[in-house]
View 1 (tube, helix red, strand yellow):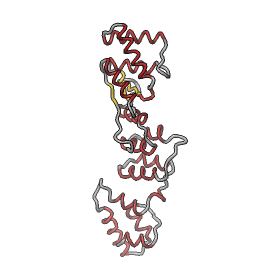
View 2 (tube, rainbow, N blue to C red):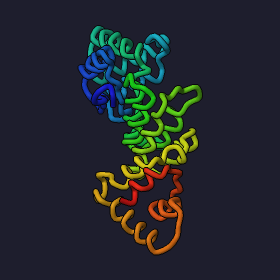
View 3 (tube, rainbow, N blue to C red):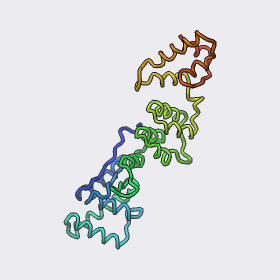
View 4 (tube, rainbow, N blue to C red):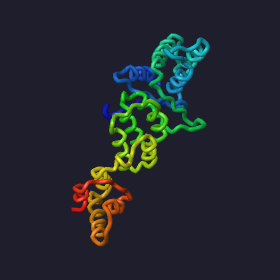
Amino acid sequence: IGQGVPVVALIVEGGPNVISIVLEYLRDTPPVPVVVCDGSGRASDILAFGHKYSEEGGIINETLRDQLLVTIQKTFTYSRTQAQHLFIILMECMKKKELITVFRMGSEGHQDIDLAILTALLKGANASAPDQLSLALAWNRVDIARSQIFIYGQQWPVGSLEQSMLDALVLDRVDFVKLLIENGVSMHRFLTLSRLEELYNTRHGPSNTLYHLVRDVKKVWLSCTVSVCDCVGVCGNVCLSANASAANFLFV
């Protein structure tokens, strides 16, 4: 995306130093979003506990604080003083808990790990809506695009959805094509002659597909009287309104 290669930290189990490393990730510029695998043990479970029960600003009630301190002591064979020091680091992490995504391993209503990672990337990447859509498209997660990107009030730069439509067609993402149409992409405006040529000559298939299609259409056109729209319809079942010069270009 425009911000460079997106990065996410995946935490599985881990010792006490992992909690300090997580804090470094969260304080980095730009911050690195973190996915914590709850149920994998040790540091991951402690981070998940803190994420679940801490409030905004890294605050946790006294009862849960004492319970968490005991858990830290038992997990890492720590003294009370060592546990308190690690607890402080943990609560510093929770001040940025919006950048932490918890993936609960083996839970009912199983969540895909790729969904957790993509959700974390969307949280952490200081990316525009088109860049976020590109991520969801690359991961083929139309559910995330629908629930987290196409939200009420989202502003889209002129033409940005048309580029996404082009990518969706090239990648054969049918659900994304439907979603983009639902959100205002007009196929009548989108399917220009240049875009049609680009789609037929995509690098994902033979480079001369359009040439062969037009050659076949030309044979039909020479053998009977048809309109330009009929000819283009044979190519892709698409009716285009084109001026004479563009139509002549197609049949050269």
